[in-house]
Length: 150
Image (cartoon, rainbow, N blue to C red; front, side, top):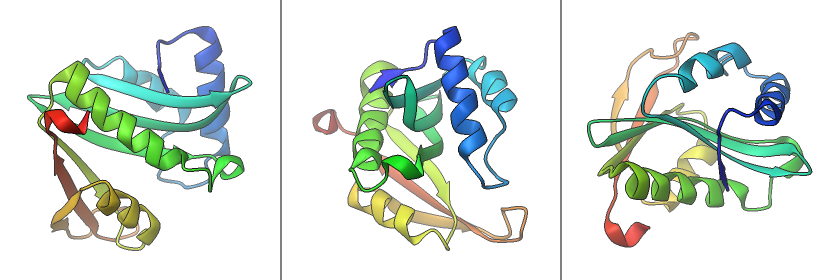
């Protein structure tokens, strides 16, 4: 697991994985770069041969971290990378940012993601009605981090 440092090589790999993502809701490469300039924002990624396999983007503010994206490339799925990435994300939030809680939003239609989050101790806390552009609700999940999680 690596933490994005903004090297030219990392920027190129990020641009490639952004082009691969097909959902309209995924941020374009330029928005990632803008977001990464905001204090408290961090990006974790896994790579092989200079090709990114997965990424997780989040932002920490006031003892809380929000997970914006977790993505595993189709060519790397079914290898446990999402589990590794989510574990590393929570460890980073606790260890490096002293966060007590991680929050995220997920579509009700994304059952695989919900299973992943629940497996990692996230609990559904509320619903934001009509949150997404297509009118779909957002389920709000959160997890309290403890020292033993890291």
